[in-house]
Image (tube, rainbow, N blue to C red; front, side, top):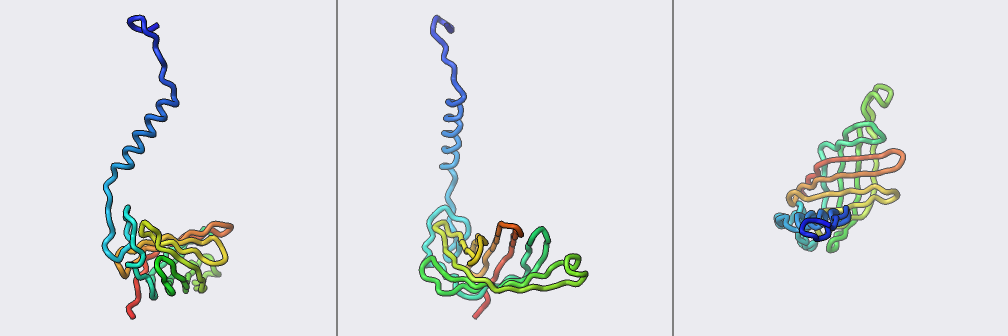
Length: 171
């Protein structure tokens, strides 16, 4: 019996978790919304009209920072986006990577490859590209109509991560 002859009830840990979840969800829904500038895919909480975003053309990076199989390096990349219809498109990537001198007989070595894939403009405005042949994936964002931030990740035995800024080449 508790105070004034009433029985006490203990609040269990389950009730505390429910209250904490409710508070967390309330905080999430009170976040202000932002929108991207027209023709860009910068972070946005509103849906993007993919028909208003033209990604076609050649995009080039001056410096491609990467880690491949634990080894850091740099290189360059040209991404060509073609056959865009609504939010879907084809991708071809011409990649040059310079292997640091200490990993290649004391001499810098440049390797190159061309890979293809497909991509999509997501409802939130971000961009996803998947590479043919393995589980490589790109997450990208337009910061203006001619600049794209590009992050690539690939798992497996020789993990790869890449961060680069691509600029659209003028026609």
